[in-house]
Length: 118
Image (cartoon, rainbow, N blue to C red; front, side):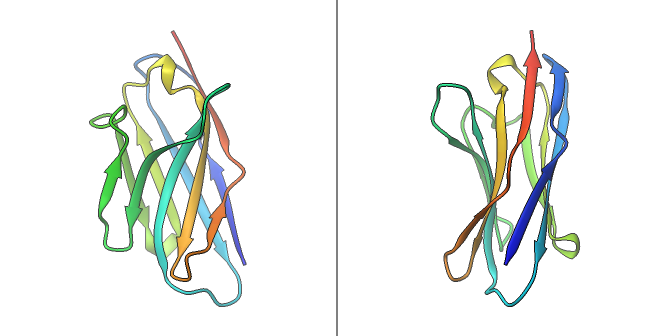
């Protein structure tokens, strides 16, 4: 089984920065990890992909965060990070991480709140 725990959310002023972390605890046998990703969901809106990183370290970002957010990972710690710079009020949302395994199973964390004040 896989358990994902996010941390690092909070309240920040517009223009500020935060770094989110998603630590994976893995028990039992799983196939390789294909990718890890960050999603966000704002009140009244659909969940959207923010950034993703593959096992080959390829990354992709939502257009709205390109140049401001950076996804990275530490394989030794089974942790993925999201560095968020130049935050805007419209970045306010619950941010969740997702792991996709080699058997194409998805696991989700519980989410962490990010609030950007203007």
